[in-house]
Image (cartoon, rainbow, N blue to C red; front, top):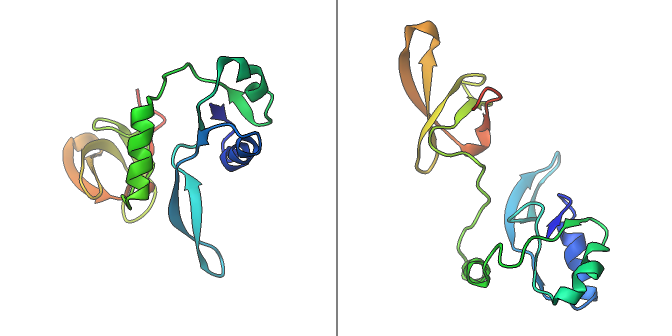
Amino acid sequence: MQVIANHEKHVARVLAVRSIEHYLPLYTEQSRWSDRVVQLERPLFSGYVFVRFAPQSRTALRSIPSVLHLLDNGTVSAEEIEHIREGLAGGCVIRPHPDVVVGTRVRINNGFFAGAEGLVTKFCKSCKVVISLGTTQQRFSVETDLEDIVISRDAA
């Protein structure tokens, strides 16, 4: 089901109280607050809680506050969910990945090249972005963390 972003844990608690089978994959992330570093559990898929339910339960599920809508049956297979569940339980480091693919036009937000725009050409441990120097058409690549880029507004 699709839910309002940042309401996933609340919806999961409501589903648990109603004894409805559900799964909310979470990952742990360090976050720096002003006075300390804390470990936060965040949803792996922002805005989604996976639910298995009988067709007659659709109306009851839609009535849960923060539920936007129910997705079609089989949108995500039980096998895919089980792989994620086993991976997280087995200690795999699974993190959300931004909708950035090779060829995406991005802008760098941090570091020496903050404000520069270019195309993603490769993913390794970090993201390789090719930047053109103005009208000279001379290019260079820079590796940066995915957190330090945003998709350019001019992207097609």
